[in-house]
Structure formats: C-alpha cells, structure tokens
Amino acid sequence: MLEFVTENRSVWDRLKQETRPILLYGMGNGADKILDVFSEREITCTGVFASDGFVRGQTFRGYQVISYQEAKRRYGCFVIVLAFAVFRPDMLDRIEALSKEHTLYAPDVPVYGSELFTLDYLDKYEKEIQFVYQLLADNVSKRVFAHVVNYKISGIPGWLRRIETDPADDCRQIFSPKPGEQYLDLGAYNGDSIRDFVSLAPDYERIIALEPDAKNFQKLSLWAEAAKLRSYAAYNMASWSHPCMLPFQKRGGRCSALDRTGAAAVKADSIDHLLNHSPVTWIKMDVEGAETETLLGGAETLRRQAPKLCIAAYHRSGDFFRLPLLVKKLNPNYRLYLRHHPYIPAWETNLYCMVPK
Image 1 (tube, rainbow, N blue to C red):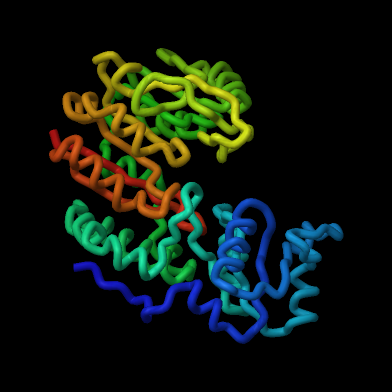
Image 2: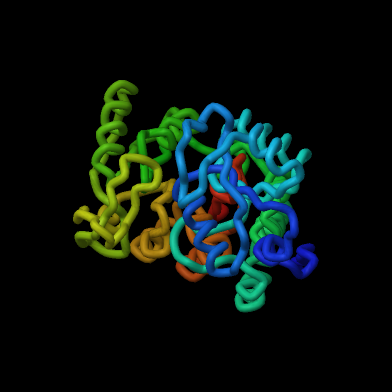
C-alpha cells in the first residue's frame, strides 16, 4: 500500500500559515498561475525576484521585480516559491543551493486544467491512486509514483530530485530497442525525441511524426532534412480521438496546444485512422494535455498491435494515475512503468507501457 508522508498539510496550507515574507522566484505563465492560487487562497506574496542577470527594472503583476541580492538585503530570512520550470543541470544545482539558504517550495500547478493536487484531491481519488500504485510493474516505478504524490502535496522539490533517471537508460532497460522498430512520434516538436529514438534504434524501419505548430514543424522539417532521415514522413497536424479540425494556440515552442481562446484551426487525426492498420512498434506521446483523447484514438492499434508506449504523464494533475488506468482498459496486457527525468516541477514524468513478447 502507498503511504504518504505529507504531515497532513499541503504546500498551500503551509504558505497560508507562513509568517515570513514569501517571495516569488520568476515571472511568466507559471508565476501567473501561482499568484492566481495565492489570490484564491488568501496567501500573501511579499514580492517577486529574478536571477540577478534578468533584472532590468521590470514589473510583474504590480510587483517591482528585484534581484536575489536585493531580496536578501531587504528581507533577510524569507520563503522562496519557485515559479518556473527548471531542467538544466546548472539551474537544478542553483535551486538546490537556494533551498539550503531558504525554505523553498516549487508548487505543483497543472500545465492544463484547473484541478490542484491538494489533500482534498488526494482523498477524492485515493482509491484510484492506490489501485494504480499496485498495478505498476517494478519497485522503481512504485518509488517514483510515491515520490511524485508526496512532491505534489508538499511542493518540496527534493522528492523529485531523489527519483531522477536518464531517459535513454529507461528506454533501453524497459523497451530493449530492436532492429526494425516502426516509430510514431506525436508532438514531435523540433525533432529532439526523434533524434533520441534514432540513437537508441539506428536500424529502425520507419518514422512518422506529427507536430501541429507551424513554426515547430518548420524546425522539425529543417532538422530532418539536415539529419538525412530515411523512411521518414511528417505531418503538420495534431493527434486526437478522431479526424477533425481543432482550435489551436500557436506559440512556436513546447507549450503550443489546443486552446479555444483566440486560436486558429489545425487539422487533427487519430492513431487508428492515420496508421490504417499499418504496423507500428513504438509510440511516443507528448501532446500537451490531449493524451487521453489520443489514446482513445488509438484503441484498435493498442489492442491489436500493442506497440511500446512512452506517454507524457504530467500535463494535468491526474495524468500520472488516470493515463495508466486508460492504457490498461484499452489493453490489459500492458505492463506499466513510471519514470521521472530531471525537471522541477514534475514535468518529464513519463509512463512507459510494454507488452511482454
């Protein structure tokens, strides 16, 4: 049984009860979301600071952005709330160093959707969470799962740092790549995941890539041409449960996604319709919150072919337990593995699915 070590207080409860100044570290979309939660939960934000080299007299949400050195001079002992994603080794080390000088939280706010992973949320879905924990195929997955839950409740990044693994090693160990792999990349971005796949399976047979953002697709096309990929096809479209046109917010980066607010239309297709019974052995899925619909659109392929699956399980608060349940519903023979790659917050928490053959 999965045990939680959260001391019955979420990060939001801790922050509300905090008597020291609370300073937001960073600006942008993540900071907006955190400040919105602060407002809803009546948590006081004292100020906003940025890394010393990024301070140029700007303001953010009415706060004058100051440097870390200025924050130390003004406030002395204060609480840091990290408000941006960190994955570079130097920045991960920076956050670890800051956490030794100050109490530091990196609250979990979903990339998409509005549900926060609070203690009430945990109580509401504890039955499903405990069930998925028991479904996981190895002890590493169970440890990752438990640490992710405790991180989401506590906002303490140390829970994530202790479970980091290398994505290439995970693919080798879980998937055992073989000659003749036929790869479908959903959310191919600029080709980074295809590059990783080719390094793992150089004797592949075919690659198909989908990328809905036009600017990303152009980068992908330029990279693929320079890389001289063989047996390769790419489509400027999204993945979904069925062929259709969908509203899409083009941001020209990793965060381009389906969005009804001021969005243009983009063509979308399902795995089953796109493949039309042609073989596939490996599917990577990082589709910015559309993972559920994409899996439903591949129901026949998962049932008949059982390809290896690597699925981003972090865009919505419940993805790390809801997506495993859906995969098992579509094909009960899948074995489920969970891994977390170096990232704060819990982005790059990925679900690996494999049917033993």
